[in-house]
Amino acid sequence: MSGTMRPARAGSGRRPDPALAPLPEPGADPDTGKLGMWIFLASEVLFFGGVFVAYLYGRTHWPAGFALASRHTDVVLGTLNTAVLLTSSAIVALAVACEEHPGARRWTANLLWTTAALGLAFLAIKGVEYRGEWQEHLFPTADFALAGTAGAEEFFALYVVATGLHAVHLSIGVAALAVFARARRLRRPWADARRIEVVALYWHFVDIVWIFLYPLIYLVSRHG
Amino acid sequence: MDDARLHRRGREILLTWALLLALMLTSLGSAYLRLGVFNMVAGLAIAAIKSALVLWIFMRLRSAPALIRLVAAAGFALWGVLVVLSGVDYATRAETPAEAQRPLQLVPQPAASAASPVVSRPAPA
Image 1 (spheres, rainbow over the protein chains, first blue to last red):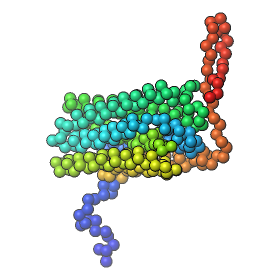
Image 2: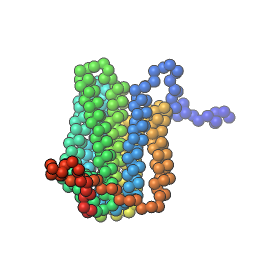
Image 3: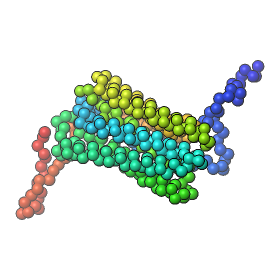
Image 4: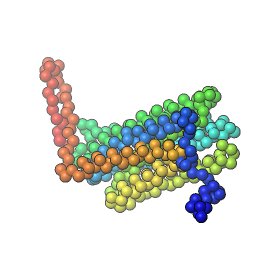
């Protein structure tokens, strides 16, 4: 009877669910670096979240202005940059996997450098975009080009704030990746798998922010 | 991590990357269809799937202990609270929002009368 009450977890051959693993003993060393980064990233969700709420307000109140303004953004460069960031995220995930395998550790530094280089490529493409928008008077200044349409200026104000904050985060990520890539090459003992994973977590988060910015900035209404 | 696990992880990362790029192109294509409000819904839904892939596979929430999953979920849950509570005000306000104030500009003055700069507004567009 009691045999039917208990699910046959142990004998089923399935991998045990890691979320059900016992908590570390009191006083044992938890992975504080990783946990600390996750707590920081949770606070970052709220940091960028405020900008997204402002965007939702603008988009629902001035749908026509947001649609018009979005058609003035460069969808080709935006899509290219999305592909660059998604690729960089995959490469830094590979770097973490290589660092955890003794035979593959020689690849880690190169993969970290590649990720940082893709981050710089993203910033360069973004710079080209900003230059074009500045020349077309799309920055929300006194001579804003679409001043006749309500909401268009709000869209570009949010665009500058959101992509600017994202670029600052990305620059910090590039710097952190470069520091760890160099330290890994010089075989510094502190550049170990756990710390490299913490940097990778941050990089993935910057990627996630862009994943949401991409449709909200470039894809509001391309058919109009 | 042994050889087999490294290869499995490599394949998994490659597959996720291909899926992410495919989803990006799907999102791009959907923007050229005339879907009304569903343009935004499609864009955000695809973004949510993409970020779930990054969180689950790249950031390894799939194999993370409960404590880490809890912290990750707390960030998004609190953002949900922020959206709903902000919406209580912003989404229910009936008045038409006023146009944003145009920035004031200082008109360049000749040196003699520079003591009292004249402030003027740019001509309305």
